[in-house]
Image 1 (tube, protein in one colour):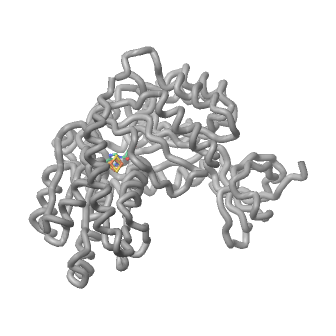
Image 2: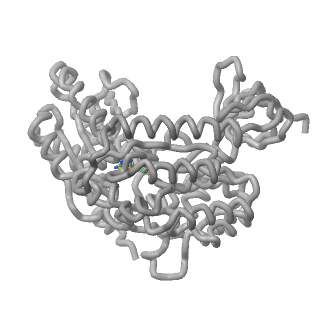
Image 3: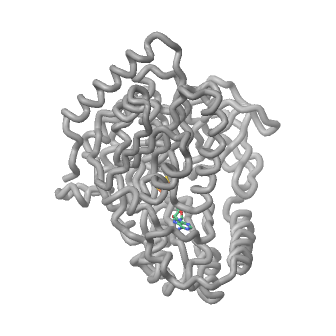
Length: 467
Ligand code: 5AD
Ligand code: SF4
């Protein structure tokens, strides 16, 4: 069973929260949290904002007016790290003009030892560095940075316990993120995540369900369950409780809301999962199932543990039990040793499956992963050319598969007001497609039926039906 953070530790952090709150009591203090990377990081930032709010900080989006800046970093690709480093570097002038400002860097990038050391050595204006597993200790770290006047580095190797009672300041309650598990056991050969986020730890189902009950009571209409590999949820709980049961139990929470989840892994996404999705009416008719490559040789080198035939069968099954299900995927182009023949396997898979949307990436070498040691002789131009061919193909597929004839009825959640020529309201379908339409602004937060008036590759416009 996953280790829960001991109560004494939570109490200790609460004491630091109070101490920082007292220091701040006399002044108006502001904090800015800048987030890079995936939804798990967005969710972690909501916890950071929750803790900062309890410590007396008001949130701002303007770094110049902030007394505390926290950069929650990502390490998944080199590009993400370059962006983070560039932005940390740019803060040097602000820190010079405001020496009392505290700058912290946390998250996946600095969970890597060499990156924490790089910041220590080359970015002297950074006051605090704390890794993924030290997130809940922000109150203590911040207190020490303020009162001791020295730089604090906390990057523990430990996997971290699950901290259940941390405060959360959500960007949106209507659309909420809820982590169901942390970490990853898969060790795909290209991926840094298992090294920075540790082994899989599942939250207790009761804690998840009661969090969602509370959210729905407070106006949540769309909940996304988060985990690096949600299909292996529960394996560490040592009872028979699995992800399908979790979906059924969340589906039974009273109220009208949509359940989404990400990310799934084809080796663990079972027929049972799709049968459960078909039975649970609140679960979105959408699966994000990354296949990464259409070549079995490359899938083996990636340590993905499935074949492309297995993947295609899974999608066929999903479509047979959930007609109209929207299917999206991630693909890596230019993995070490990928040949033109391997790549044509990827193109063929895209033609066969016809995804509603693709997230495509050029392979990025991550030091410490097995793929970083594999010979990678293909020039960048070749990889880029393949990447562009893949985008062009998906463009054609999207046009075909996402076309909905005018008059088609769709059900959407109205998410926000907007100001475009396509409508004053922005909504999303269960398949996560944006839809624009005109209507009363009181509809924000409601599910409504629309008739499609125009549909492009991805976005749509619609009008309210009379019913
Ligand atoms: N290089 C390129 N893309 C990567 N991804 C993960 N690691 C890498 C890497 N080293 C992609 C995968 C994953 C998505 C979140 O990011 O496609 O599914
Ligand atoms: Fe998310 Fe992975 Fe980036 Fe960490 S490295 S923020 S888990 S995408």
